[in-house]
Amino acid sequence: MTVILLRYPSILGQAWGRAWRITRAELSRR
Image 1 (spheres, rainbow, N blue to C red):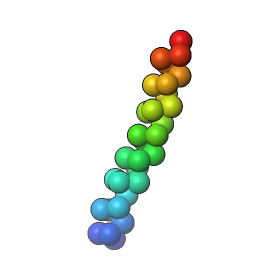
Image 2: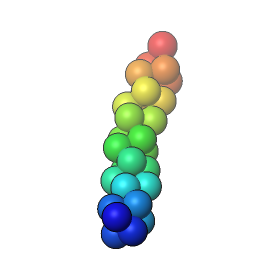
Image 3: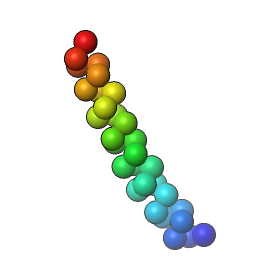
Image 4: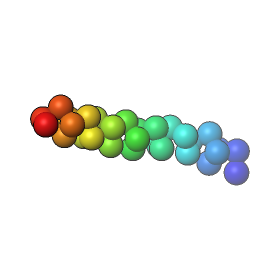
């Protein structure tokens, strides 16, 4: 369980980072 809890934030962070870059790019286009 500990390993999953430690790895989960990093995976979530990467996914959030990608989504944030895409969203920011779309907003900058407008």
